[in-house]
Amino acid sequence: MKEKISFLKNKIDLNSPNKNIVPVTTTIESNEKLYIGGCSIEDLVRKYDSPLYILDEITLRNSCRAYKKALEKHYPGVSLPIYASKANSSIFMSNLIASEGFGLDAVSEGELLTALKGGVPSEKIVFHGNNKSDEEIEFALENKIKIIVDNDHDLKRLEKISNSFNYDIEIMIRFTPGIECHTHEYIKTGSFDSKFGFGIEALNKLFVIISKTKHIKLTGLHAHIGSQIFELDPHNDLGKIMVDVILKAKKFGHNIKELNVGGGLGIKYTQEDDPPSIDAWIKTVSLSIVQACKQTKLDLPKLMCEPGRSIVSTAGVTIYKIGSFKEIPGIRTYLSVDGGMSDNPRPITYQSNYSACLVSNPFNNNSKNTFTVAGKHCESGDVLFKEIELGNCKTGDLICVFGTGAYNNSMSSNYNRIPRPASILVCNGEAEIIQRRESPLDLLKYDVLPNRFMK
Image (cartoon, rainbow, N blue to C red; front, side, top):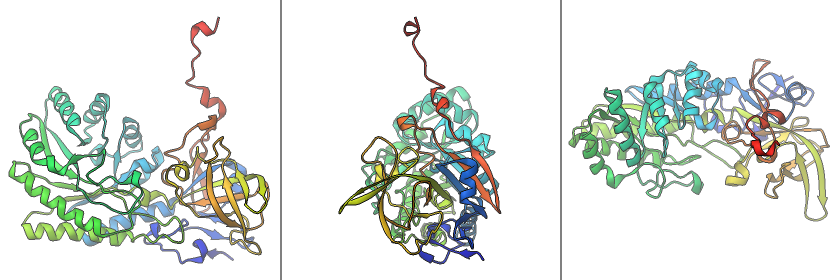
């Protein structure tokens, strides 16, 4: 008999996966072992080895459809959800979000190329970045991808490059709305002190400069206030601010047709986390813009939003194999796994917390041992969990870490010359590889020994 679970036996929310800790297809079979997408985790590791990234297709599609449904429900104008591909960029992810009608946000030529290869229409791609190269700008323009201008340097080079293309180019500009929200210092992006975007006080001067260019047409605004946000009020405030900026732009002859409110909706990593639902977030954003436009008698702009983490994070898990144990009497017991900071840099970078369980005996029956889960890298700070309760376990047992679909694979590295894990997709009992495991030989591919050392 299968038992539907979420972490600590919470009810799974099928309509807003960001409010769950586990993928929506997570089950425990009668053998008391963990399954995701109808697949045995133990069988997957036997076939694909560990560490192993696993993505659940049904959770991914449920997340995409929750955004589409909420926009259709709450925003009476035209809308387009755009996947923030920095969360997890791959040809597969690009293909999946394109199949769900999403656009995509990219911040490099690599992400742009990945999106195009995955089948995302160029007209649904937006190009971000605070220090775009000339080559990246030219690549975007050649592929008719909309550029979001971040600063004066962007604008000057875009004007110069656009003259050689000899046709009008529609752009959006990014500005900092000055909204503070409770999130990690490194992922606050909407306050006045941010590396991203024009200051709101500089917009009038900017509007004059753009109006004097030959081929650049300002048609959209973008603002983003941060990531892993649990508050709704900041996004309510953001809508009002952005409509005010539309009015300012109008005075300088600019017709703003698109508003991009960024992303930032948080997910449930641990039992203590309580993010808003996707529906509640979209409702807040939509109503603030609708009300502000009604008050100012403006036509509704096309509404864009850029979810990333809330699309892919809960759909992903990472599987590790337990190796060594080290008990320090009266202090702690270290349990080491075969991965760590190279496949999940967020704990050491952001002090991020996750939830995890054993693949066999996931409910920790008959035992509540406390461990510090350490990675295998040569860093004292390579610790995935400072304290976590697990059942009786031994070398060779498997641990499943939940909520790792975002910013794990995409931020992974080869520190200590450790190859990146494979990534697989599971759905209805079938598993397919979407990114191959690197080998140690792969890491030597771009090394070059100078000629004089070869004599």
